[in-house]
Amino acid sequence: VAENGQIALDMVLSDMDKYSIVLMDNQMPAMNGVEATKRLRTGGYKNLIVGVTGNVLEDDVNEFLVAGANLVMFKPLKM
Image 1: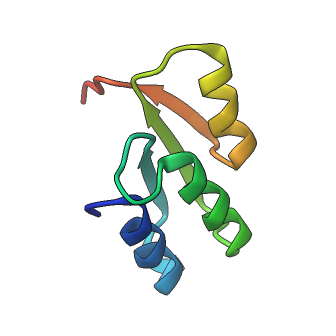
Image 2: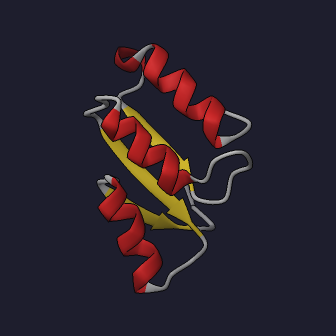
């Protein structure tokens, strides 16, 4: 678990093999999930990224997908 988007980015890029899936919350301090997703893809991360958001508007979902998320789930998540 990362405290903000920058920390999430740093964690994953420092050891990409450690993370087979990333749940990326859109609303994070320092860097939002869309930007962190873009940077993960630019940095070479190839595994699954799931965007997590409370915004259900089509434009918000598409923004995550265009950034490189494989899919988008809506909060609250029920496990």
